Length: 69
Image (cartoon, rainbow, N blue to C red; front, side, top):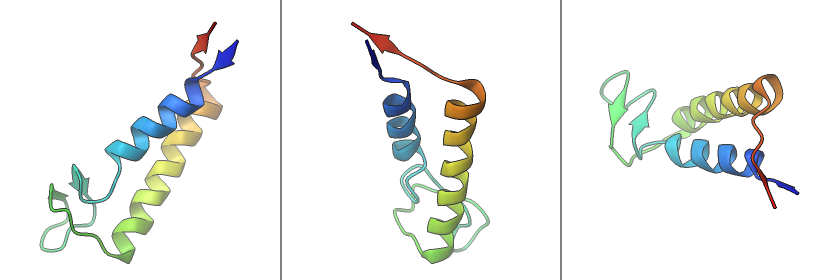
């Protein structure tokens, strides 16, 4: 049986937390920007830390698993 939990969680969070796609924290003119499609180094760093924290939460602490087969 294949465990698809880590793959699904990591892919969904990567798409949702892509800087500038849906939300950008910190933004260029405001604290939070929506749909700006612009990034800088600080934004990438903040989104990377948030991504790591959420992946750790979902996969290690909660233990999300999807089994197929």
